[in-house]
Length: 315
Image 1 (cartoon, rainbow, N blue to C red):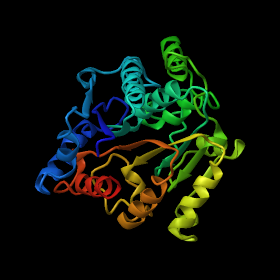
Image 2: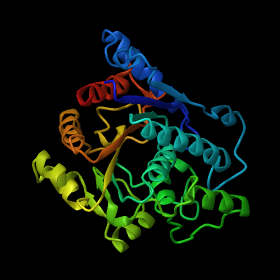
Image 3: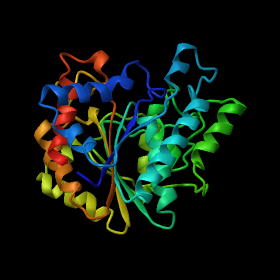
Image 4: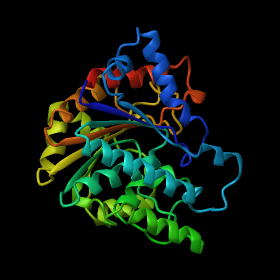
């Protein structure tokens, strides 16, 4: 536990529904009702290892001036702070455990990892019901929690929608985010999707074009969980470091009512725990992120308790 630093990222600027900013506190409340074991064990170290990253959720009180990339100007600033916090964590030889509001924050996480390991290949294991490969040019909603991988991979997509000059400027800034202005941060062959089952045609075309590795629920259940983990790690054998991003909606919707985009046919709690335990044993692992817990949509804090159980089982 002395090597972990928890980064609390409450930003929910990228989501469609409000409430993901409260996910961290809901998980903490679940921890308190479970005898306050996990967060206390991190906090009791001599040097405080729980860091709250400043957020700009007050911007949600007014409508975004951007239609195709809502709040992209503030999300850029937010992700810059996340990148700096992640990079500092790695520089301090601490393991970043990131608990974030919505998945757009992963743009900052990936930028921070790449800033620190700038000459390395970063493998990404994206455990999620969704591909998050939209850009402002392809998104039917303009919600940026569906865009983090596209920004990190410098994808514009088919340019189906016209975007404003300001949106284009900030989208390019996000693609080059970081002091080293590396673009792209990650390559298609360095990504593995696990649990993917809810995509749009624009994302499917990119996945097929670039032959991105997908282990969907049907594939998942045709193998043992160890085989799934081994398959993901084998595909990323050429990578120097691994980042695992876990969206709570990778679980079946019956288990996680408290998330913005729940989907049927997801992972069970046991499947998720076993999978992540195997993935996190890889010595190349440099960062783990859990995201999209929304207590305003939850039932008796069920989803937050599930998230805590998963974190507890890993750390």
